Image (cartoon, rainbow, N blue to C red; front, side, top):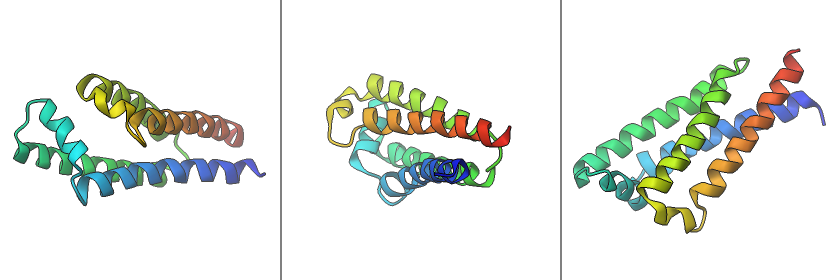
Length: 127
């Protein structure tokens, strides 16, 4: 398969994950797990809701940045750092989420791995 096509699949998939996680469990919800994580930090239910909405906006914007900055590596690096930071954050703040179905361990590690692959493909196709 053409490495540029594989790069595009990786890049679009990473953007999709950020867009989806910003929209569905945050902006269109917020999902009870999102609220529980925010309240575990000491936020009131109302503030937890507002924080979830703000996080959703940031994630949607970042998903767009991953697409708009197509030839730049920094969004992929930032995504990888964010995936690991969010995984550690979730493990500390809401460890019960780590063992649930469709949990952050599998999501974040897979997006991180896809980011590493996409960064390598970027290096190969740019060079």
